[in-house]
Length: 471
Image (cartoon, rainbow, N blue to C red):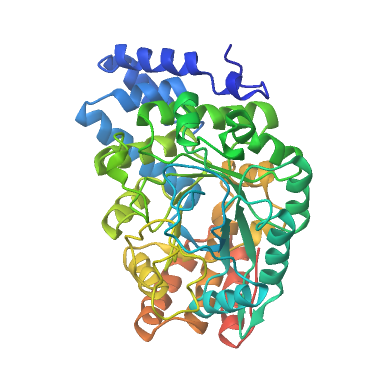
């Protein structure tokens, strides 16, 4: 029985409800009166249900798709302005006891070298990331209770936060590790993490069990209920995601929105972020073996529909995708991107990009400076801000800020100040020139005069060597 408030996986992600939803969407994909009324509802900026959004996904009328794209772009501007948050993944270990058939870290892969960073190697990686200008990391590790216990993850977080190199500092660590216990989530919260991220991979239970034939991840309910335990452990910023290409995308889309609805219904706050990775080539993995891959057009449509369905949620796209596609979906709702990512265990401290321990092929291989320059040239503000986490504006407090439009008086100046730090400390000459022009223009857009005055003063202080101002 479908029940968004239930804490049982098969009740809040209900197979029959998804099938009924897809049937309803098929029956109404040419019902333009209904479709127009759903888009009208989306214009109110309060989101859509999984069923309403699924009807829009099934609709193939070009004029209405264009209307959805325009609305997604406008909603993104309304809630996030033209800021794009920057981050980098840091892979700590590829030891893993699971048998996931789409991931090169699976237990039976004997061709990939296994590696786990020592604390000294973590230090070197973090310094290399700080030297690029990164302030926010997402740490990743395979599931292995012997090699990667929670104590190891906590030690790495402690090490990362302890490193101050020149003007560098990692101000926020987000964590993407396997489903764990309420107690362990509590320990992660106490360690000062930002968002806990866990991809569902697929919401289709039968497919999930086949794709995860062995290991603790085989337990569908335990994995799907992880966000509930994270919330119970005090982590109120959680990040959802599916790996598009494993199962039919319309099924996954409905499941993803149902999961967001469940978090809202059960805990009063939806997901802080939604990621949209697609399966990519890697050691021992051929993406063509999975017959549910999606085109760039469908991918763009999914991004636009997530933006209008869950308007307050951050959307993340990684370097799995090309520069061209990233450009397209940033316009349609993506608000966070990685830059200069390395998906191997370690590798940032090496000059040459290592390939032997990569989790997936990286499509966008530009440096962080090149990515920052590209974003600014396109009119976006690359933001290295972590203020909300550090000021305790998480969960429903962040959502309230977002919903009442105060982001322009808070996140906008914070983004400009952290960009100024980047320009002073790390940028190439050309990037600095582009950035200074952008800041001069964008600072005038802050609506509150007092905030604008403080921000201008802080920018001068940053020029004279001071760091870390925030609203």
